[in-house]
Picture 1 (cartoon, rainbow, N blue to C red):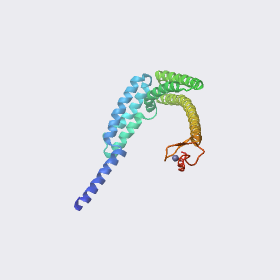
Picture 2: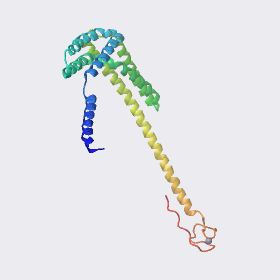
Picture 3: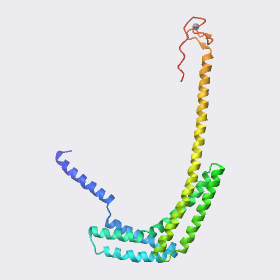
Picture 4: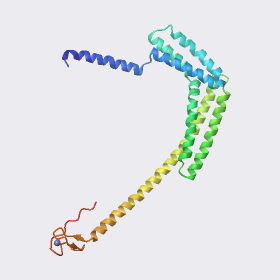
Length: 246
Ligand SMILES: [Zn+2]
């Protein structure tokens, strides 16, 4: 590369790096506007899926929409900040909790099946069954509460917080059963490895002992000599050194 071009390339590199960092770390008007569209669709969907929460959701929309509208009159960073504020006002607290609940319930259902399938012995199977039944009841309660809904935002927040805590407790009970089962399996595998290692060591010692008593063949005249002789009984050649034990 010609020296003249170097400073140019370097400054170009700095500009590119700056653009990358900006895209990765900073909020943008486009990004926040896109988020608002996604969030608005999500919130509308939540209202349809959980009609009992619709009053609280509508109140949230009514509070966040003026913030979004106010952003239209702003420019640059102020606009970005106002859009971010609108997004936060729409999604924070109970709305985010409501949006996350379905995935949590689904994961808990899968975890119940996993615990039952993995159980390696009767006591684990029993523990898994008890934990799975508890989790099933927590899921039933959550679904009933989701159906019942909430009169307003404060009630929605309290209900959803309780549901998340309830489901988390049920999940950690199942996780404990699975972890205990895994620890038992690990211990069993370790014990099995130790038995196998002992057997291999004994076989090696037996083989070494047998080798000491084995007859040996002379390298010069091919005659067999019994183990106690250190030189060939036919030609007198010295016995070759035994290979070192491994
Ligand atoms: Zn010999």
